[in-house]
Image (tube, rainbow, N blue to C red; front, side):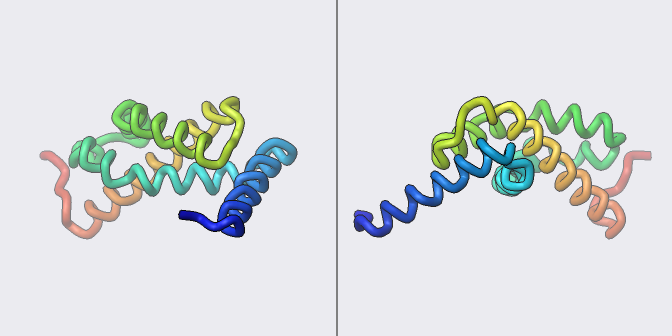
Length: 123
């Protein structure tokens, strides 16, 4: 069970995030939160996508991975908004940023695999 001091600290952290996102449009902080959501989603989406991503163009990978990640990113965004007490109106932008960050991570990982010989392109 949390003590009063811990509960107060958690409340202050939530208030901080809320104020940053509300008054400064939170571009940097929202991007940081989006990056965290992308990192949390990376393993699951990579498993769903398989090795096909290495053979796609960036545009194809963006659409394919976005579709594979949509439900997971949506759930992560809803959870983050609730956890931090942020307004729901930030959800669509946060989801877009998280999806973009996730696609970048996955495409970079797949490109590294190809360069290191871990994945071969179909002939």
